[in-house]
Amino acid sequence: MPYAGVVFDQAGNLYGTTYGSTTGVYFGAVYKVDNTGHESVLHFLRARDGTRPFSAVLLDSGGDIYETNGEGSFGRQGSVLELNKLGEPKLLFSWGKLHMGTAPGSFPEAGLIRDEEGNLYGTTSLGGTGGGEGTVYTINHLTGEFTVVYSFGAPPDGCSPTGELVFGADGSLYGTTDIGGQYGWGTIFKVDPTSGAETVLYSFMDGADGGNPLSDLVEDSEGALYSTTAVGGAYGYGTVFKFDPTGQTLTTLHNFGSGGGDGATPFAGVTRDQAGNLYGTTTAGGTRSPGGRPHPQRCPLGAFSGWRTCRGGTLWDRERPNCSGERGRRHPCFGFWLLIFSPHG
Image (tube, rainbow, N blue to C red; front, side, top):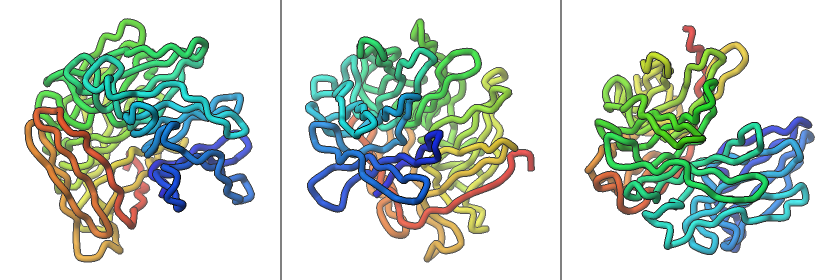
């Protein structure tokens, strides 16, 4: 079952991960689909590699593949894995039980990005020195040294980053947190990769602006950031938004759940084409969704949200009393909906 999206190489081949495998022996796989449509498994994930990859892979110019695993490996709390062209694995870092609530963090759900020197950057959804609310980390491409750049703390800071980071034009790292912030519904933040200084740029209110941003940010040529929220908006079923980091203003571009078959509850972010059009998916809804709309996920700070069901499967389970506690796990529904629209109207 592929949870994340796919990545192209320069030859037109696609690379991705699966969350599990049909064999029952392995805990996910890294695969390739070549430009003729032929699919091959590059590596089956074993417990020692790390398991349950939530995010897309990262390719470097030499053809090596980098990916994160949300669970498993030696400490059972996730890993960063590198595969060479032959699919041979190299474990770059493994989070362990001793890391829960401590400096290195635990449970990396987001994918990786690279700076110009080849250093890797990512986030963990829990752990760190700020009370176990997640971290931003880096891995040196030459030495393999692992360093925590920033540890998230108690509100009004954000908690539980699950989306991939993005480098802004100013060299800062930008990202979202699922929960936390001034109102408990997540944040948009930036971190200086050198000093580790963090700034909360925006706190979601679960009103017209949405709440629980789970996904990656995408930057345009003018520095504006685009993504989605899983809940909130005009109808309570999530939004697509644009954020101006300079003016720290957020604009809602689309509200899900109007009843027009546009889908509901987006977990993933958006992709921009050269004309500025945005493309994305929702976990439920659409014109073929049986029995009406799904129940939206509600997970404010200090509240408990248990099992949520949607048409075809479980949507979410999470327990985060006071922005910490047991790790939430994402479960996709059957029947995704593709959204295509222009932010320019």
